[in-house]
Structures are given as C-alpha cells and as structure tokens.
Amino acid sequence: METKTKTPVWFWIVSVLALLWNIMGVMAYIAQAFMTDEVLATLPEGEQNFYNNTPAWVTAAFAIAVFAGTLGCLALLLRKKWASPLLLLSLIAVIAQATYNFFLQDFVTLSGSRVIMPIMIIVVAIFLVWFSRNSIAKGLIS
Image (cartoon, rainbow, N blue to C red):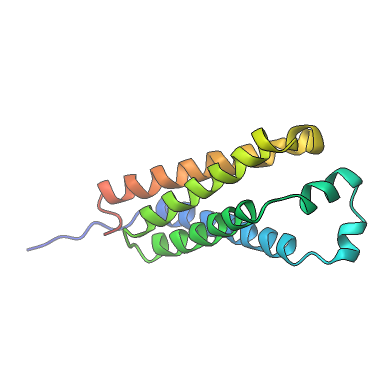
C-alpha cells in the first residue's frame, strides 16, 4: 500500500508569496516597457538617461526574469518539477540584468538607497532555485 505525504502548509505559503513577488515583477516590467514619453519626461534626468540608454538585451533579460519566474512559481503551485529549470532561467536573467545595472551602468549612483531592491531580487531568485530543488529532493514536487 502506497502512502502519500501531505504537502506541508509552509510549501503553499512560500509558493504563493513567490508567485505574488513575481507578479509584481511582471507589473514592473510592463510599466517600464510601456512607459510613455510623457511619463518618462516626469522622471529626474538621471533616470531618464538610464531608461533611454538601456540596451535591448537588458530589457529582454528583465522580461525573461519575471516571466520565467512567474511560470516557475505557477509550476511550484502545480507541484511540477519543471519549476526548477524555469526558476534557474529566471535567476540567470536576473544576474544578467544586475550585471548591467551594477557594473556597466552607473545604477548605484543613479538610484542611491534604492539599490536594496535589486539586491533583494537576486537573493529571492537564488532562494527560489534552492527552494525548487529542495522541494524536488523532498518529493514535494515531481
């Protein structure tokens, strides 16, 4: 007789919070990708320069990061192990975008104290890769 382990409540809580986090990322991407010239003109000059000079590959990395992350979190909720490669893809895209922001663009000087959010994004992306792999190892997703 086969016994099935009940999925712990913490798994569902973490997965739902992770999905909400990634949905906020999707909303941030959409807001940036479809920012009108009028809205852009209301930003400080440094931010206008940042958005106007962001290469297409960085915008693509942003899109891949948030959409792969969102799909990965949906896969967690569906208890599918394909969550792990999607969350890894999201992490790689996050690192690509962060590399540009921190090392190729003067993001730290431009954003000042807002540098905490990009660091949080990297930490959460790393955690989600670990969480998905740990969930596979524990048999919580298959």
